[in-house]
Length: 105
Image (cartoon, rainbow, N blue to C red; front, side):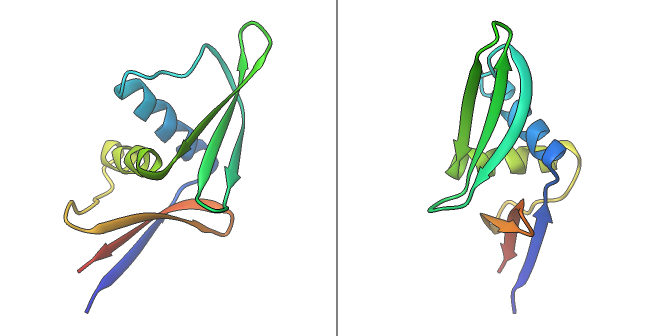
């Protein structure tokens, strides 16, 4: 028997997760305001933060794969949502939202 759990992230939570992860890993976002968030589903899930830079230009910051998963896991830990270390984790889309899929074996 296995257990499957999905944690679905609202847009503001996803933005907080990405900003926090980049800060912790020494790769902060460029100065400016977060404009919009785009989610590309094919062939892999890519989340793009559109930053409106202080100088007026637009900067797109993509995040995908292991980096996206690490950001979501770190955010869960920060807000005290349990994520078992030994479980298999993957990223998926549920109802248009990014979700962390956790499978305990």
